[in-house]
Length: 450
Image (cartoon, rainbow, N blue to C red; front, top):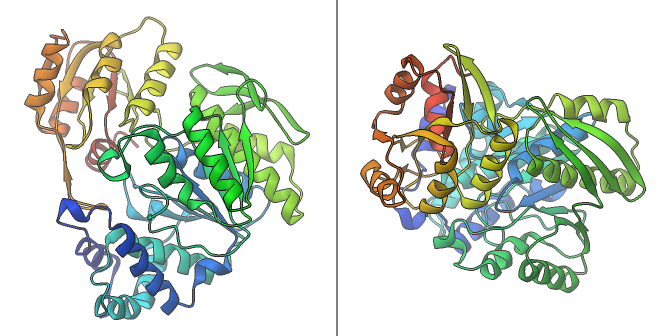
């Protein structure tokens, strides 16, 4: 098979989106499948210096920030994240420039013959995410990058990215909480075991302070693998956090590196933690690999940080529109706290939808105190890692009624819902949240929010 253009490439990938919900997480079989593919490609992942990032909240932001830092040192830095917001090319970047359509197409065409061999084997059909993971590793190897910053998809132990066998890996495990419980387990302990699965022998591991059961599991795993574990503490390694509507300011201390009053373009105290994880990994890499860095370049880069869908703000038709993909209790709590701190006492008109599998009631309980109104909408995503739909709006409406919030309405079409909120004579500003898939749908259809 030969793909003639980028549209063909997208169509080819879409044919690999699992249709059965039970196939969303391919687990052990998927891991064997991608290992086989990468063996056929001569294991490009083991020829790279990799930073591997797992966690419940903040892993994409941490990955993005680390790639910014490494790019400041003239290191060619690959970044692999998911999901994408507007274009699939966002997932694979070098020095924070998206892979081009031609590069994407050429790389996919090179690996398709090997994908076909895998699919004729006992392992069966590959998934969308598995192919993109293999494509990223192969592309980064061909481009001779210095570092690959790789975000896991779901979990860690059985995630398609967890196929790195070299001993120079750096692992970051961001804050853990309850998410994807139908796949990873119902308890923090079960989830921690999955996330800790990215820790390899003699690797470096960096994590923030976690719940005691999580810290215990990470420490045990690190000891078993003879990995070096660094635990960042709020108030010691990152402190004096201040927020305003333009930036997050904090002081960072780690291994005798002191950076006072860092100005970060990403908003929220949780982003100070994510940035500190990225800075710690950066410093450890600089010491291990013997490169120096320019503090002024680092500061400038962090101040200009801008990550789509993470408290992104726009001014449209005289109203402020805030978009954030918070989709679990931990992320929503951080998001609502940040908004409440930045806009003290202010209420917003919310536009929201949740993925059908989400435990959404705790999210509504966090949202309702700062909501003037809530518009419930829907989405149907067929062009990302799996086909998924939103929770039925009437189910969310019933839950709002039950928690005593009455000023809600249903507008099933998200574009129409946003149009109505923008055109309304009500001057209240707007927050759109609940799912990256909702955010993606609206970015795709509304050129005004770019």
